[in-house]
Length: 462
Image (cartoon, rainbow, N blue to C red; front, side, top):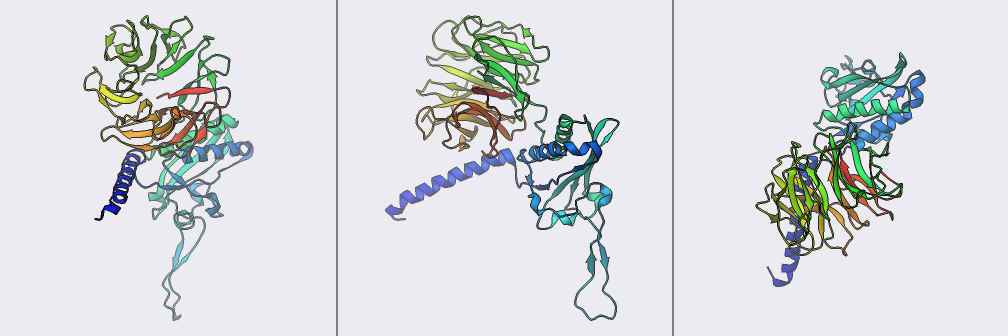
């Protein structure tokens, strides 16, 4: 190889390494080939029809937004759309007529809607969701069916058929659509996000308070009303406890609420100028957080779930914050530390041993968050950009390979994985003010969830 081609070859090798890393990481998140599903608009009878707009949009959004299935374009669908299983009519194979000299073999005669209408071009789908709604006994009833249209007959094609019930209004239509979508996604081993909440910090009332909303941004509700700075929410693995830091009493205090009763639970907070970033262990028996108890820099501590039994984990003359316990193993922690200069992401054992730096040392790397399966983390990094202009990255912890998900669209920070491991929620000021967004784990499917005031530091319920 001549010398003048060496830089080019090195660049190609570097690019190949990045592409390989991206492929490996995305494979861990999204798996292999994406199946195609057809989701035609369902119809309703009687009073159910006026709510089908909400139903059909919700069903489409749930499936398309899952990142698990590719929805075939509706403009490609056949004109005859089945509403019940009885609407399917198998084609008839007619033998060649005797006495005719023809090279043609048996002729297929179409009798009505059939599986191949959906499995063959132009739809080329693997699956079909269909059905209809009606009102019975003052309830909205969905007759929902899910078929594998690549199968040769109806017996093998039928994956499930099920009844769903809801109120005869828009909320009821939205509910049954979500339940139908959840059952479809469950066939692929993925849990729907329906029913999950996102907790976040908002200043829309004039003070920073904790708020909650549905996973899609609906039902935004104020949780705390301390009329002070209340921030850094965290939720336990069983969703029973919500922790946060509040300055309502002057010094920063970690407060733990019951999500069922919305009442404060016992938690002993150290007297310190910094108490923040509490995270629960998977079993809920311990917590880990950052504190400056005793003076000096904020370092990491663990304690029992009520704050007793305080134990120091790190003792370094640098700020060490944002600890997150591996939700799969419960034995290792990622955190942010300035021990090597600018803040970087580190990993250590739960007892504080075997500390290693995960990020390269360039730029500022902060806000680490574990994937539910405990192999990947998401984090915010200024790598390649001016200080303070963060983007979202995902890293394979064992191999220290990473990919970039956002690209130069303002300040993007505090990424947190959804329980399905396929979505991320994060804060971004790409439109001026900090707002909450979700996206798929490959960086696509961006959706803005908030607009009132400024909103930050989101976390998913489990």
